[in-house]
Image (cartoon, rainbow, N blue to C red; front, side):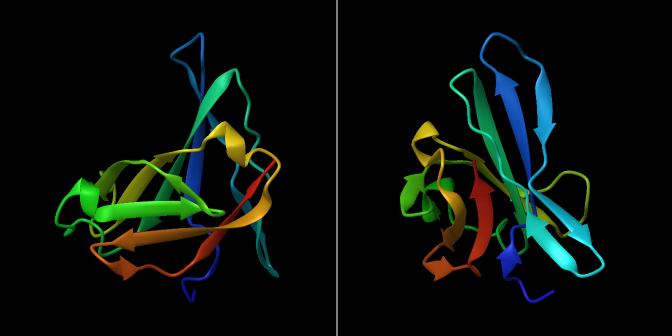
Length: 124
């Protein structure tokens, strides 16, 4: 509700020897709130993290967006409109293996010099 805490996100694992994508849980919510679910990273699959927010589609260029996860700069693969919901934007990232075992870590996006609210994910 306040733009902080567990990231509004999806994760998709793509096995190295396949084109089959498998969803990976990122959070779970109960009546008392939402908590992160550890995202497993493996040498056998690439894990893509898809973040959701607003105000991203009007960026100057893809190079104008930076992503930092737990102190590690991560390349931004896509940043723009989310195709299913009007007004919702998404940012696609690849989670590098060096984040394995990080636990609960911050995600900081910067869009054309403006830092978004800091959110968290849990990396197993």
